[in-house]
Image (cartoon, rainbow, N blue to C red; front, side):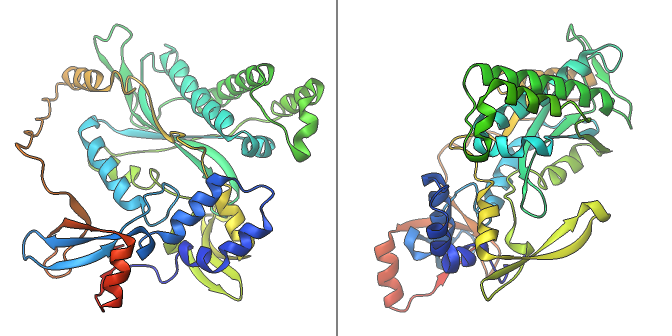
Amino acid sequence: MTRPPLEVADIIREAGQSFIENNRGWLTWLHLKVLRAIEHCRTAALGGHLDRCSQCGHRAISYNSCRNRHCPKCQTNARNKWLAARSAELLPVRYFHVVFTLPHELAALALQNKRVVYDLLFRASAETLIEVAADPKHLGARIGFMSVLHTWGQNLLHHPHVHCVIPAGGLASDRSAWIPSTSKFFLPVKVLSRVFRGKFDAGLKRAFRRGRLSFHGSLSSLAEPKNFQRLRRQLFRHDWVVYAKRPFGGPEHVLHYLARYTHRVAISNHRLVSFENGRVTFRWKDYAHGGKTREMTLSADEFLRRFMLHVLPRRFVRIRHFGFLTNRHRSAAIALCRQLMGEAPKAQPEPSPSAPAPASTWRCPRCAGTMIIIRRLSPEQIRRRCAEGEVFIDSS
C-alpha cells in the first residue's frame, strides 16, 4: 500500500497545540501522550536505526516508530505479528462474526467510565454467547471465540461495540466430541439481544451499587439512585442491536478477515482527503444509506476531539479470548478440537539455536530482502547525521 499524502500526524503538528489549549478542561495526560507520540512518530525526535539488507547488503537509515496503539502508522506491523501468532490456532471450520452494540443512551456514561463500561461490554457479550450456545435448544456446546473492541463509527463519533469471531461449533460438555453448527446459522440474534441486555443491565446495577461509576457535568444527576434507575428503565424500551454477519470461510480466509478488525484505530491515514484552511476532509461509509462512500469536513479542532474520544485507558486489553480459547486453556483445547475433527496436529517450528539479529519493519528498496538493524541511533546522532547531509528513510 502506498504512503498516503496526508496523515493524522500532519494535522496534529499544525493544529495540535491550539487543540490542547482550547480543550484543557477535559484532556488528560494520556490524551497528551497519544498526541505527542503520533506527532513524533518516525521523526528525528525518536531517534532511528541503521539497517542492512540481509541479501544485497544495501544500507539505509530510518526513523523509529512510536509504537503507540492509537497511532495509524504503527498498527500494520503490530497486526501482522499478531496474525502470524494466531495462524496456528485456527480450526478447519467456517467462522461466524457476531457484533454486540451498546445503545446510544449509554454513550455519555461510557465516555466518563471507559474502563468499567467497556469491560462490562466484553463480559456481558461473552457470557451471552457462552450461555446461549450451551443451551441444548440452540447448539448445546462449549464454544471459544475472540472479541475485539471498537469505540467508533465511520464518522468518528462514539459508538462502542464488540466484534466476536467464532468457530462454527463447539465442544460437547464432556469434551468427547466436536458439535458443529449449521453452515448458515449459529445462534438466534433475538435471543442473544435479550440475554445481552439483561446481563449488561445487571452488571451496570452492580457497578452503581459498588460506587464504581463516576458522574460529571451533565451526568451528575445520575448519581441519585432514582435517576439512575430511570436511565436503566429507558434501556429496556427497545431491543439492543446484536448483528450476526454471514459466515465466512475456513482458516484460509480467517486471517484476512481478522486483519480488518484487529489493531485498527479510529481512522486510517488513507481515509484522509485534505487539510486546508484549518478544516479536515475525510471519507466515510454511510451505512444508513447502503454503505455509500461520502466525504465529511470538520474543523481541525472537532476532528481531533473526535479522534481523542477513542483513546483507551492505560493497559486496557481490547482483544480478548473467551470460552475454550482463553489464554490458560487455548493450546490444549485447540489440540483436542483438532483431534476430535480428525485433523493431524500442526508441526511446531524448530527453535533457533541462536537469537537472530532483529529485523527492521521494512523491505530493502533494491531487492525486497529483509532489512536487519545493525545499529541504534539517538535523536542527537540523527540530527548530527542530517546536518552532514545523510538521507533518512520513512519506512512506513
